[in-house]
Amino acid sequence: MPDDCLFCRIVDGAVPSFTVLDEPLVLGFLDTRPVFKGHVLLVPRIHVDTLPDLPRELLPTLMGAVQRTAAAMPVGLGSQGSFVAANNVVSQSVPHLHWHVVPRTKGDGLRGFFWPRTRYDSDAEAQEYAARLAAAIEASAG
Image (tube, rainbow, N blue to C red; front, side):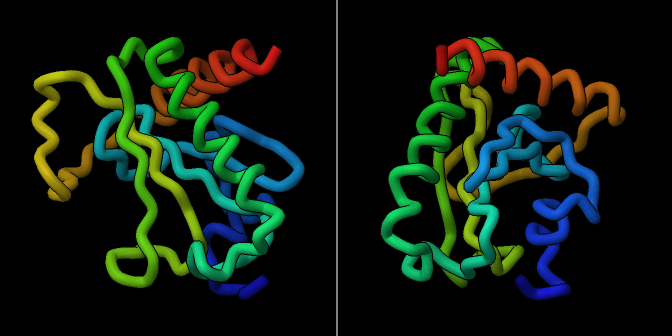
């Protein structure tokens, strides 16, 4: 695990985050510069740079977390759907594999791959979004 990897530092608790999903092999947390509020990043707890580097046996676990998070967006946030994406090297702001799950609503203004960024008004607002999504993910699991 590289000492300078921001996501590894979030995984080990050295950098705080607004946790949405906390599982033995996957961590999901709010992006601090979301495309839309509720934008989640899902990372494997082990450090891998890109999708081709991910051990094959972790793929179902990671994609299951992505699927559950995408399903939670309409329930937890009232969105109509979601946008799911991962970059490999190009446009990968942190060199640690991560999936973006972004809440979407028709007419939200997102076009193509231009991702304008926003901010949460406060840590309390970010925590509220994280809690709503975590509750929706938990409800769908059982």
